Image 1 (cartoon, helix red, strand yellow):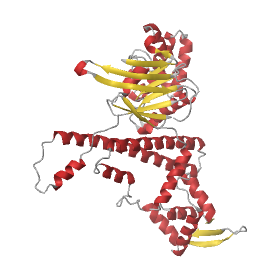
Image 2 (cartoon, each protein chain N blue to C red; image 1 turned 30 degrees about the vertical axis):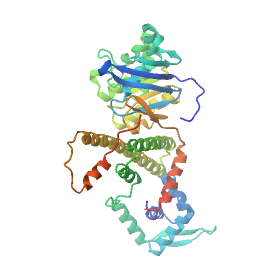
Image 3 (tube, one colour; image 1 turned 120 degrees about the horizontal axis):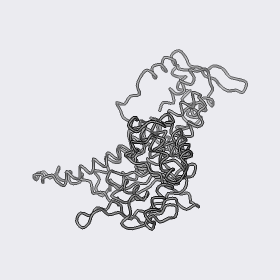
Length: 208
Length: 253
């Protein structure tokens, strides 16, 4: 998640000070990714170092304001105009866990799947309730719309995860069927692949 | 659900099993299912096809009888009722949304909805008034005088839902109620179901859509005729904090 560009986008709407940036960032994302003030000041420091923002004076209360520079504005445009890259998918702990679960002997994959499904379903219920509240509280302000989009993104992601878990289960069942009906493989003199294939065969579901 | 219910459940399944066929052809559609649905509660049932979801609903609605165990609706054991009394419970207490809509082709939308009320002895005029209100609640007041054949699948489905919700139904049973609907209309239907539950009704809904099940207070998972798992209510706000803590631990990407 890019705090850097988030702050640039807020500063593009006029000079602001650190604490104010934090509040406005969280208003748009419903505190889904809370920022601590330290993070805000560190990021502002880097943005200033890179010439994307510049100090814009102090108010009577001693708040230090920052304003976006021409270069900063260009960087923000670039951000909006460029898709978020998917070429390097972020490491997904669940995908790694399942990839390991199907190869490590003694792990009941069906139980792993169901535990995750329950957890993700519960999260989906919670997000749906948050969305209901967001809809009820929608005043038509831009920050209300921003928060709705964020909570719906959480909903879509949780839903995709549950669908994928269902699919994993189907995939495992199909794999188990094939393992049962497939004719025995000719013995491999090295013994290697045969052993690996045995280890990879998932156990039958123990959810009962 | 961690909340302790002080009220009696509207629907109570006690060790309910349903076996179809005999001997070698015996199929256990449901095995010793225990389930309570309380006033105000919307329960979603999920599970792969053939896991017993629809059987669960037909038993809960008294449309089929368990091979063993008891089904109680508002404290009444359905299996102990005469056919006539069972029909009255089904008509008065239970609203049922089927996968196929079961609308009577010769009756208009409003007449289809009003029919069960008229059978209960409500005057035709009062029944029509209730029917129009139910149509209005689902945003299809303009369909009142249309016949099922002149409606789209989605419109028929909403009429069927209006019929299930008319009157003082304490228990609403729905089998894939959003099946033929686009996502916006589907949400309208869920919002209506949710509102009914918030007003005190109990509902059980079978769905394969996680996004729709998410409207429920509790999601139960069926597998091979058994209830294997269920979600618990958590506090949504605390979930976000937990998510944030996790992502903070993982550091910024």
